Amino acid sequence: MIKIGVLGAGSMGSGIAQVAAQAGHQVVLVDKNEEQLANAKSKLAKVMARLVEKAKLTADEAEAIQARIMYGSNMANFKGCGMVIEAIVENLAIKQQVFAELEGLLDQDAILASNTSSLSIASIAASCKNAERVIGVHFFNPAPLMPLVEIIPAVQTSAKILAETKAMVDSWKKVTVVAKDTPGFIVNRVARPFYGEALKIYEEGVADFATIDWAMTALGGFRMGPFTLMDYIGNDINYTVTETVFTAFYFDPRYRPSFTQKRHAEAGWFGRKSGRGYYDYAEDAVKAEPNKNEVLGNQILKRILVLLINEAIDAVFLNIASAKDVDLAMTKGVNYPKGLLAWANEIGLANVLSALDELYDEYRDDKYRASVLLRRMVKAGESFEL
Ligand SMILES: NC(=O)c1ccc[n+]([C@@H]2O[C@H](COP(=O)([O-])OP(=O)(O)OC[C@H]3O[C@@H](n4cnc5c(N)ncnc54)[C@H](O)[C@@H]3O)[C@@H](O)[C@H]2O)c1
Image 1: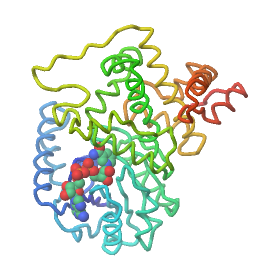
Image 2: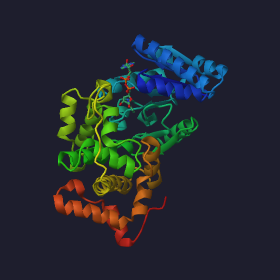
Image 3: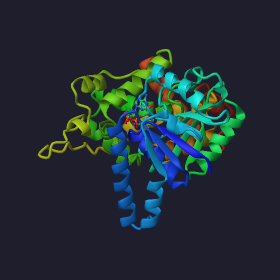
Image 4: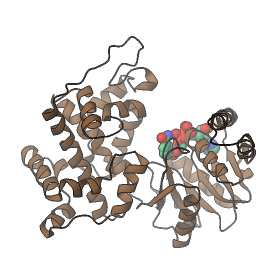
């Protein structure tokens, strides 16, 4: 088994190191900040103790997993690693510098992977002389618990490196999907309307946060409503992702950010972590009650759902990923109750199209334009083969 290097011992890097060590690899976890390394080590000890308590691991296994991780503050420790996964700060210039340095430290055939959420893999790979061995390996938070990993070959990546990387991550019992190197890859692109349309519905005064969340969970079966989820992710982070995707798509109105979320972020109302977001998390706070009117709830659900489905269909149309992988990504990466394309088949593609066209006619906003693939499939009377 090859030795795996992980650069960055923050929330993602420490989780990825755990995944690789649990799969049996020797792991080298490097962070320039010693305190982060110490935190990662004690956090892992706690997680392992809990798994032993729950009888998911024996004490010996837990000890062996921890012993397989070597902690270091210098990239020279990566010598001999067959693959290094980078999970440091989301900054292109810093990542490029690190990749250029990594390339010189590792063997010719070692894989260089980045866990970036929003930067292009091509731009990171461009910092290496041997760019064909650079690839995106995008885990979801928390890495040990979320099954999905998006594998993103850059235009420069060789077919061999793609196949090797996919096989490696598959062997870690993860669900892998291959995505094109485009903004947001699959999940962070297709999920945009879950937040954006919910915010728009609120801004139009159609319903309040609690009612929209109730419609999506009680009627739609989503595990968390959009406002609860944005408060969980953090409005600062979620807003930045939306703005980055919007800019990267040359200001396509489909990804337009919301002033409501921007103001919440500016106010420091990040969500759970700051004690207040769309909801108040103080102990004595009065819980917001939804309006459980099912007619209204179903209107809200339908509006958000058809936009999500439209994004999923457009991702297939533009070859971002296969239909099967798009559905896998949304169910395994963000726990959607059903794959969006399977859901589209169930509702009927013609019904999805007419709901979108109704919105488009009313708003005259390109945000609501239906995917060309959806229109073609309806014309041909087709549905998705999944
Ligand atoms: N947090 C998420 O939900 C999430 C999900 C998927 C992907 N990502 C991506 O993963 C990466 C890391 O995110 P995170 O949330 O774990 O960040 P984090 O801030 O928790 O951790 C980053 C770590 O990198 C270290 N670091 C920074 N520069 C370094 C350098 N030059 N050399 C060595 N160590 C360095 C920092 O000390 C810190 O410990 C980012 O690219 C992010 O976009 C994050």
